[in-house]
Image (cartoon, rainbow, N blue to C red; front, side, top):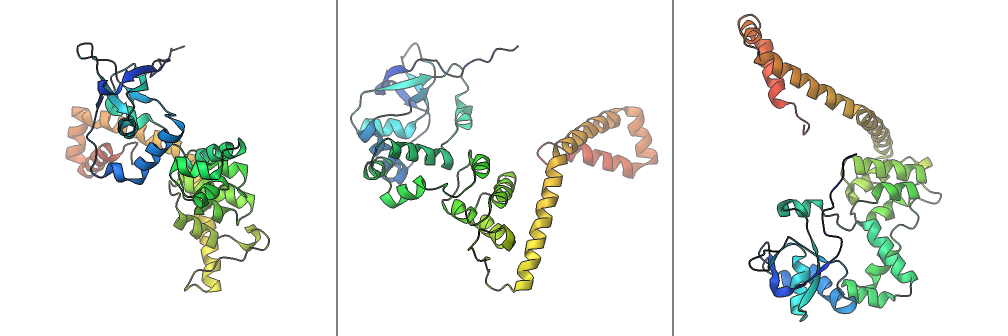
Amino acid sequence: MTNIAIAFGPVPLVVSLDKLLPSRATPAGLVTSKKFIQIRTSIKEIGLIEPLSVGKVNRKSGEHVLLDGHMRLLALRELGHHQVHCLVATDDESYTYNNRVSRLSSVQEHHMIHRALKRGVTRERLATVLGLDIRTIEKKAALLDGVCPEAIDLLKDCQFSADIPRILRKMKPTRQIECAELMVSANAITVAYAQAMLAATPTSMLLCGEMPTKLKGLSAEQMARMEREMGNIQGQYKAVEHTYGQDILNLVLTKGYLVKLISNTAVRRYLNQCQPEILTEFESIAQSVSLEH
């Protein structure tokens, strides 16, 4: 069994702020941005939650290159701090670090706020720490009310508008799952997409008391046709998704075979003389097929 190396040292290191070298310039207007003010307020009210991430120490200068946490570092300096806890990377791949960072999803944010409220933290204090108004805190705390656990599980790693759960809770659980599945698979977790699926949802799949959504300019017949077409699209999408992996594998294997085939001098000469159109098609397939298409 292959051992997996850890990306950071297990124990945070206390580093002086003047020994941290930012790996990028501070964008203009950053200190007045909502995000920066939110981070600075959070550090001021409850302290630093997530350590900064740095590279290995430069033995000559004693300095560390900052990999992640530039806004936190700036906020710490503004608040008069002199030292900070840092996680030290065990490799030198600083240029790929941010691609491996998992940002807080909407579901995680909801759970964090909900847990804080249950522990007795007031909405006012949360609003101050997060730089939000109380109404937004209440909306985020109730974000998933009425959404079935299976749909929540599908959306758990995504960031989305608070209006999407509002739309989903108008549907029955099975339809919520279908819509969440389709949005995640299509990588289109948007309000407009959710509204379109709600409009195409049959009345039987809506919660009792919910009226079918009407779109301006569409007649009842057009809405019915839209429902049927959306159902067909979902069925086709799931069918393609089911065979996608095998199809891609077949394409890659086919490409490899054709590349090897047309690399053979004798075969290439024969095709060029007797079947030039087939050679052209083979070359086109060899150049165009990839896992990204």
